[in-house]
Amino acid sequence: MIVIDLKKLQETDPLKRVVEKQSGQEEFSPMNPPEAYAPPAMEPIPYEELPPFLQQLVDEHNRCREEVEAFEQVLNRLKEVGLRPDREVDQGVQRFFRFLDENIVPHNIKEEKRLFPPLQERLLKAGEHSKGPAATTAVDMLEDDHIKLMQLAAVTFNFLALAARLPDPTSQALTLDAAIEQGRAMVELLRLHMFREENVVFPLAVKYVQAELLAKA
Image 1 (cartoon, rainbow, N blue to C red):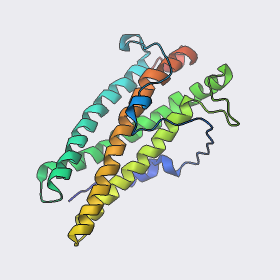
Image 2 (spheres, helix red, strand yellow):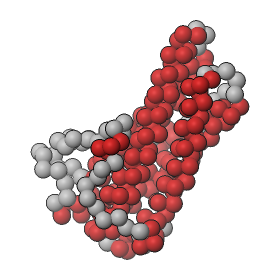
Image 3 (cartoon, rainbow, N blue to C red):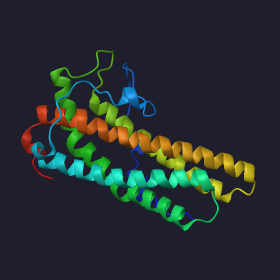
């Protein structure tokens, strides 16, 4: 049985925040890696040269990548064997959603409180934004990612739980397929989001944000 305490997740769910955006620029698709992983030209910054706070975020990304890889294997196994009793699958699902609750959500909140506000202000002042009616920046893109992630996580979790309860085999199989599809979209979005941050946004932060704001991990 899949069990996870969603109370904390509900309390910190970014979907409950009022985020109003209008974007006139084309959004990268997390399911279209060739274009999505070709960001605007930025000079990569070696880990050793990043400020302590950004190093901490990269360290957390690396831990997240390990969990994402493990969850992807769980999804692949679910695709192969279905919902028959499987301790490895059950533990893998529980582990990922616990990691989401205890690590990814706090990580995103940390970015939204410490990194995004000063970076957004400086990007707008420097003209690093879209030229449409509503100026949007890389920060807006990342905030959208955070919201999409929580949407995909909620749908994946609920579909998995629903599939396990359905008595009709056909309905169960269809619901499980939908859960796996949404789970894979979530996995790809997480990978793309971390890529965007490390290759686009963190270099922008080093360029524009005052060093003292990034000095403490």
